[in-house]
Length: 111
Image (cartoon, rainbow, N blue to C red; front, side):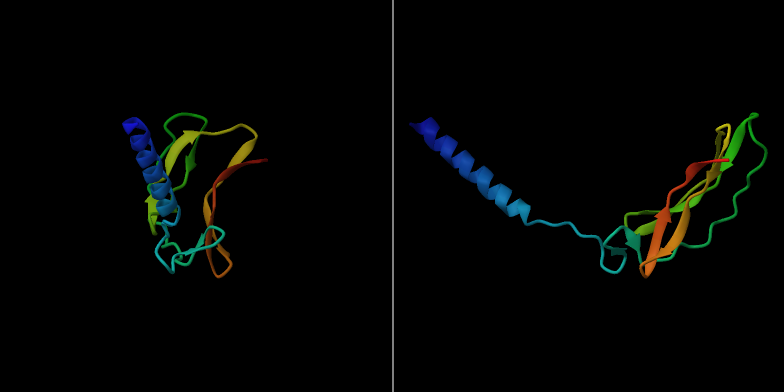
């Protein structure tokens, strides 16, 4: 009978914990995020990047961009990488959206 009481106590604890945690919402800082995935803070101007010469034929420059991480803009430096024949790289870009800014991710575009 003691094991049944222990099971009931464990079950009650699990149910109570689950119901308490279901009301827990982690929200981003106010004023930065908007519903739909855009932010209120404009990205800073990009820093100057020294591009140099491609390390090998067929490589292209993927420019750096400002990402949004942890409630702040974070710079992701540019790098050399393999190109894709018949395509060009459209870099990441911040665009105005709904009173804020949204990051349009970089992508390959057919020529």
